[in-house]
Image (tube, rainbow, N blue to C red):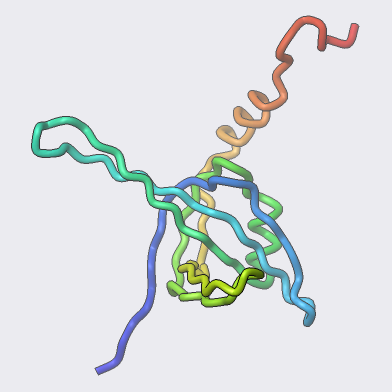
Length: 131
């Protein structure tokens, strides 16, 4: 029997994408995505659970993601879940799970991006107005 490793994540970027290049010249884009699950507990109160996913994209997808995504962007990702193991500077063994996205869809609309950009650029006080 064969096995299958594929995860689908729909969520929001928790930080701006970071683009870097391998020594061979392959582009790599890393960012985190948050998903939030809402459900009622036994007492009927609404509980929220947020799960964070580390994501890596490679090649042209990495460059496109870096160009069009920003913190708060809504995305749909699909790809294998990969286990990374390494030893840190202090000699401790470290492990993390990462989604190696093979497919990505941008769910944020242009209007949402324009609103977010406008909100980020808003003047905070009258002293900041250049007249």
